[in-house]
Every structure is written in C-alpha cells, then in structure tokens.
Image (cartoon, rainbow, N blue to C red; front, side, top):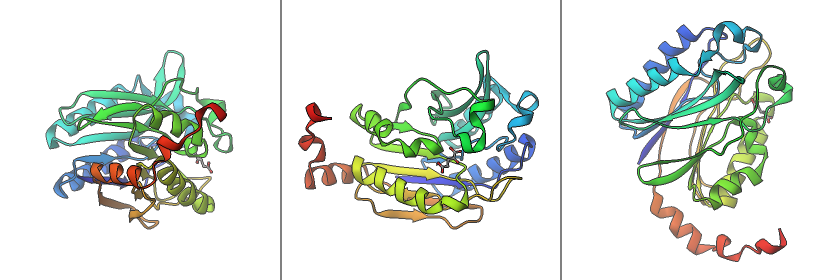
Length: 258
Ligand SMILES: O=C(O)CCC(=O)C(=O)O
C-alpha cells in the first residue's frame, strides 16, 4: 500500500496560503496512487501561537471540512497532521484523521506539550489515546515531542496499533534525535512509523524536513531531504507478522517486572 508524507513548508500564521499548499500536495499524492496521505503538525498556522485568538480553528471545523471533502474527492485516507483547535476548554494541538469516504474517524490532541516552543503557555494538552482504524488495521497518531515518550507508543501498540503516525514541526538542530528516536520506536514496537515533518523556517526555528517511512525491522523505506517534498513509500502489513515471529518480542515481555 502506497503512503505519502506531505513535507510542506508552512507559511507562518497564514492559513489561507497553507490550505492552498496542502490542496496541491494532496492532489499530487492522489496522482501518485497513495492510499493514505499525511500532513505535518500545525500545518494551517505554524507556531504563530501569539495570534491564536485570530487564527485558531473553532472546533477544527474548517480543517475537518477541507480534509473530509478532499478525502472523498480522491478516495484517499488523510491523517490530517494537526491544527490549532479552538475548543471551549482552550486551544489544543489536534490531529484529525478522515477516511476515504470523508468521515472523521479520529481526533487526537498532543499529549506532551513542548516547553521549548512555549506550547504550555498557549495550548492545553490532550488526555486521550490516538488509536484509530483504516483499511481494517489498527493505527495510532502521535505528535512531534510525543516520540520522546516510548511508554506512550508502547501503550498504543499493546492496544493493537501497528502503523504509527507522527506529524511534526521538528527543528533542524536536533535532526539526529528525530531520526534515531523514530527508528527506535519502529524497531522496539515492530511496527511501521510514518513521520511527516515540515520544511522551511519560522521566526524562531529552521525545520529539519527528513520525513521518514520506516518499516518494522527499522529499515528506512523512504526519507525526504530538507526541502518541501512529497515523500512516497510502500508498506506491507504481512511484513509486521514476519518480523514479530522472527524475534517474538511481544511474547517474551516480562510484564510483571515492568
Ligand atoms: O523534542 C524535540 O526536540 C522537538 C519537539 C518539537 O519540536 C515539538 O513537539 O513541536
């Protein structure tokens, strides 16, 4: 199954520009024959957190309509990165997943807020898991900083997730952490990791790009460079079973010791 990461540059605080960019990349993903397309973190606004009262999306309604219409038009599932979701409790950093019929199948709000980018000053953290199902397979969403918390990944994997999505705005200065942590999450969980970072820069950071599609053996199936790019790779659910019988990590766990 072909899957793509839309490694887009994000115009700072300009949803209008970003919707056009996303629309064009989603069309390219469809033309490339992808069944699932993944967007980066906060792809409508970037990290323009001081202007959230103007640019956050009320209950993510605009993003949901756009993602749902696009998914239906192309018959393609979309893991809609995340958007600044203006809820009655506060603004959340929320991933929206729509299936190829245009139905919203999941909303996951970033569990671990990242202080280095002042998230805790402007956003509220989510409190629910990222599990969802597409193509009859259990999958899960995580957002950026979440990859530093292996226990959060393990929990979703023990609940059945075998494809793990990570939209991000990860800075270039720590690209080595990005690559190492993502590969480790794939190896230890014997699962696919599909990580879509942004490219370009904002007033505070230059971003790493290097979106990655990683297999359950830790093999890098596809990896982007630093610039805007549509990254395409193939995943095969049967390979997960093969890897899990080659080294039966899940049978060998000594849960009573952990
Ligand atoms: O953990 C890191 O180094 C980067 C995390 C990050 O950029 C984010 O969560 O937005």
